[in-house]
Image (cartoon, rainbow, N blue to C red; front, side, top):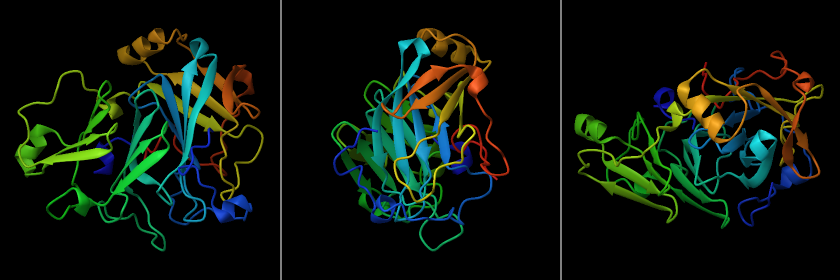
Length: 304
């Protein structure tokens, strides 16, 4: 499922809960669950190029995964911080999608669980689907049994997911896949935090949908600059730098043009006072050291 699906700080009440260990800055080693190719942060701009999502991998129940969403403003001169949330996932969801101009997020399954080195089987935890409203500060977590009438297998959704960017709905299974495999037709409605399941799929999906993992036409990378990456046990941390790299695709060029951003690499440095990123000279970019901060350049697009 994972290879064909999306991968895809304003405190928000109950969502941004400080963990006791993190609040005390207790040292937590890098979790053994993570392969060497996984870095502490994953940066993506999946379904909406106006926003950039920085996922921070969790260190376990003491310091769960975190997500910070930024808005591209001032013709790419600044990444304005919109929302920060502590996720329900102790480590990392299998997939996630941010839509609604950064307001809504859907995460799919736990990738790892406590006390287990191997990746978790999908649909086996209470975080099978979690729907976040980052403006209201709400989160609804659903186990598979709460919306599926039959036991879920490893490929209970996908292999392709589609987003309705206007209605903020996520179509988790295509009609063709329902017909081929007998999967139910599943739609997550993010504004209402409801999941609709039907044994009979429509003949076709609505017009105007976006395939999130086909939207990766703007590449992102992160770096700690000359410093060290943050301590795993310390909450609410961000990379010192982000780097935008245009991709040679027609869609990528169109997206950057719509945002009035030049077709070139853009480096951003974290402004600690505001929590936003500000455009800086590209010469300030320091590539991550692969021996100390290994990782892919965009979300978990490259798996080992």
